Each structure stands twice: as C-alpha cells, then as structure tokens.
Length: 542
Image (cartoon, rainbow, N blue to C red):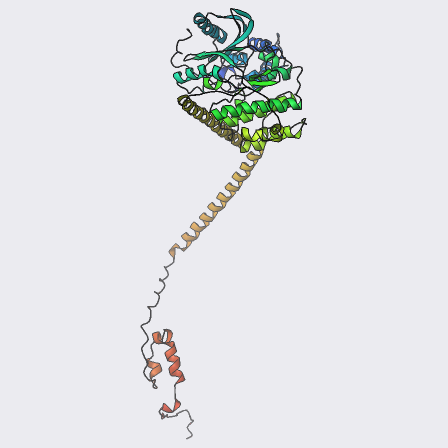
C-alpha cells in the first residue's frame, strides 16, 4: 500500500485494549467464532512467551496414553487455566503473540511489513532520512512500530521514527487530522518531548523525534535497556526500584504542569503512563501527543472503563497519573485497582495523592482536577526553574474540531462503561441465582407455596359442598325495606282520653317523640270523666 493511499473501504478499526477471553470446548460443540488449536500450537505460543520471564502453567506433554478420556479432560482443564493466566495479565493480554493466537481473523496481518512499506514510500519524497534498524517490539502497541534513523549528512545524530495506524477513537476529519499532526512540531513546552518532523495521510501518521539513549521513566524504574522488547523489559523484571521522595515530587509536579497546559489548550491527551515519559537529566518530558489525534486507545483503558465516574479525558489523565505515581513510589504497578490499602510510602503526602486517585472512594465518586493535585502538599512546595516559555498555537477552527472529537471519544467511553456495568450486574445476578443458598431458598418458597395452594383448594371444596347441601331449602324472605323518613312534625292537639288510641306508631317512634313526652307531662287527672261500672264479680247467695 502506498503511503498516500486511502485505507480500503469497510476497514475495521479495532480497539486492541479490549481484553480477550477464551474457553476450551470439545470438538463436538464448535461454533462460528471458535478457533481450532492443537497442543503443539499452545507449546509454540508458550515458547515465544518465554521472553517475558514468567513461569506459565502449560500442562506437560504426554506421548503414551494421550487419547485417554480422563487424560483429555485433565489436559483441557490445565489448558483452560493456562489461558486464564495469560488473558488476565495486563501486558501479556495486549501483546501481538496472544492476540494472533486467540483471534487470527483480526490479527493476521504483518504490521511490521505494513509499517516498512509506509516508511519506504515516505523516504522517496524525503531522501535526506535513512533507516538504521527497526526497533522491534520496544512498544506495547500492535499497530505502532519504531525505527532507528539518522540524517544522511549528520550520521552521528540518532533519531527514532514512529509509525501508527488509526484507532477506533479517530473522529477528526481527514483534513483536520492532517493539519493537527503537522502542528505538533510547533508545540513548545519545557515538559514535552520535541517532535522534529510529523506527517500523516488518511490512514496513518509518521513522526520523528530525537532518540533518547537513557530511555523512558519506566526504563529507569525497571533498570531496563531502552532497545529491549517490551515483554522482556517490563513483564517480570528482576530488579525494580522506586524513586527517591524528591524525584517523586519533582517529576510529579512537572507532569502535572504539562497536563494542565494541554487541558487549558483544549488538547486531549489521555495516554499518560511511565513509558510515555522521557527523562532528560532531571526533567520529565511527555511523549506521544499524537495518540489522541490518531484515536488510539489508552494503555490503562481496561482499568478506567470499570468506573463510570471516570468519564472525561481530564479525569482519565488524573487516574493514569495515580498509576504513574504508584509505580514511581513502589517500583511496580498496583496489583489491582481500586487499591484497598497502600504499602508504606516515603511520605504520607504521597499516600494522600494515591488515595485521591486510586482508592475505592475516588474511583466511585470521581477524580480531582489537575489544579487540585497541584495544590496538595506533595507538589505545592516544589520550585520549578525553567526559562522556556510554553507555546502551542491552535487555530480556532481546529480547536473546535478538537472539542467535537473529544466529546465523541468521551461518548464512546461512557457507552462502553455502561455496557460493562450492565454485564457486571447480569453476571452478579446469575451467580447469586445459581448459588447453593439461593437454591435452598427457592425450594423452601416452593414448598410453602405448594402448601398454601393445597389449603386454598381444600377451603374452596368445603364451600362448594356446603352450598350443595343447602340448595333444597326454601329461600328466606327478603328483609323488609327500611322505613320511610317521617313527615315534618306538626303541632299536636290537646290530648283527651282517646289520644293514646289515635296516636300512630310513626308519631311515637319518629321525630315527634318529644311532643308526646310533653303531652304526658301536661296530663291532668281532673279532666277524666267518671265511668260507671257494673261489677258482677261478687258471689250470689240464694
């Protein structure tokens, strides 16, 4: 492919930082995405990974009896454990050897050859440069390659060329992308590593810098040689050493200053780690400003995608600074993130910064700003002496394009974090639902429900039986309707001797009861007429 040729249509821009998982299955259950691997393939991979210096648990070979059912089941279990160890190791899981072994469909290309083709086409138009040697696998990225170079008329000056393909977070238009890449040599800051030359096309970018013989900050911590492969240098180093307190304070302050400068300029970074910091005497200088323009995923992306509060590139930079500070302090990366407790440090001020960026509370509630970190006791009293004035002029149109691209990068990050959160909840629910304790609870509830249902059925049967026995009886007469409301009370006439006989029940039981009582009270005995009686009860005497 020519250097200025457009990428093929339908090109897939993979995120190489997404961890791959693998599960060994029997040959009868092969599916469309299953990769067929023999034991000899595992053995070859294991031999190639020996450069990492790790003792990987590959099951041993067996020449006789290797088709026994029990042996096959035991070997399958051992190979699954081997894959689990590889895929959970942050450095191994990102290396090209493992990616090609697990996903040959997406990682079958020879990226070194592709890079050489692009670089060769570049040298046809720029004849003053020439390649000395390829720096094989000195970086961790699969699609980024490095070459040692020199200028023909200055053979003693060593330069390093980096070529990188586009990544999944490339949202700039081709025109804006190429313009911003060509602006990088104009970026002047005492704590950025100067770009000598930069160019780009629609599918990749090429940058040239001075080769630093001392290497990166990670090389200093791990006592490594800069030209050695990444796996050999950092996967299982024999000697590591944390930095002195004054170095931690100075380097940390310098890195925070350049991050604040980039944030103020609206230039997204998001790629801070110890291999992207070059040491120049007692000065730290930041590397690879082009990564965010290319849309490349960050080294620590598998970590911060787990926390939904780390959802901006500024907060990503702060979280990655926490990783870097931990490595500078203890000489190794943290075993896991978030960090529950921190080992003893040279100063409690170091632990305070680590807690604000890597603790459970920080990852749950959000990161502090770079300005807040600069005000913390660890860095606030550091005096920086530099005469170089920061300068990086970005035209207004390109600054707006950067803002839109930054928002798109953060949107993809937020969506990925949401998917991870939902998957984690589903996995947790399935695990809880399948636990032994939960099974016992479901059995008890099912037993209670069965008993309740049987009791309700028996009650319903009894009610039906009772109704059938009473079906021959005559129906009871309906209850009488309620009495009508009484008429309004009228004034009563004077009560005579016949008044009780003429009083209606409604008058007695209704609202006129008070009038009746009044009549009884006003009753006069003298008004009664004398009655004549004939008493025949006396006995007759004859």
